[in-house]
Image 1: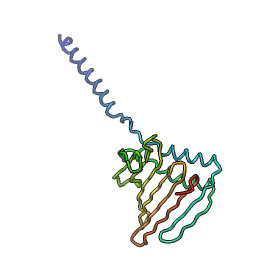
Image 2: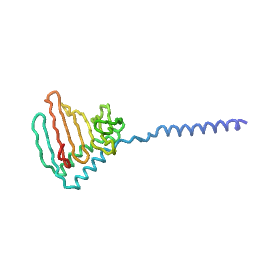
Image 3: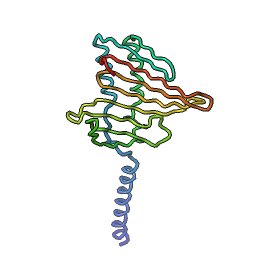
Image 4: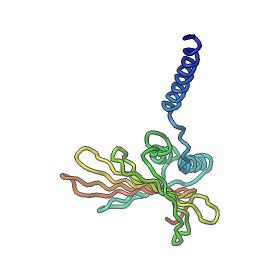
Length: 195
């Protein structure tokens, strides 16, 4: 008689154990990241490829504030080296991706849809990425990447600006305890006479 009473109890216990194991396995599986950030690097890579394939006159303008301004023609290899700095600021991959939040708004002044990716996490040197899309066709017009980091005894603000199909800028401002503030602006132009 005990066999008949114990058998249903054992079946219920076995079923409960299997269900708990499945729940625990599901809880320990990491969630799939479905957040999609704008593919900034793809557009920059397309511009880089376009420069490699076309005979553009590429020139670099460097300004030091306070100080001088200089311009020089550069090679495609030099262009690629400078442009690579933008690709290194990729926030679409982990662990950086989880630190950033996206907000979107329509800017009537610039006739742009603005995508803003920002973080308050002190681990990331990159503080925000802004993408301006043409509000008529949703094609990217400009990309801005702002970083702030410590370089030994001084701090550096870095602003990277990319004008799709035309040019890009690298603006660095440095300041610190034993250092006078300075700013260096490098503009690379390959398909735009006016900046």
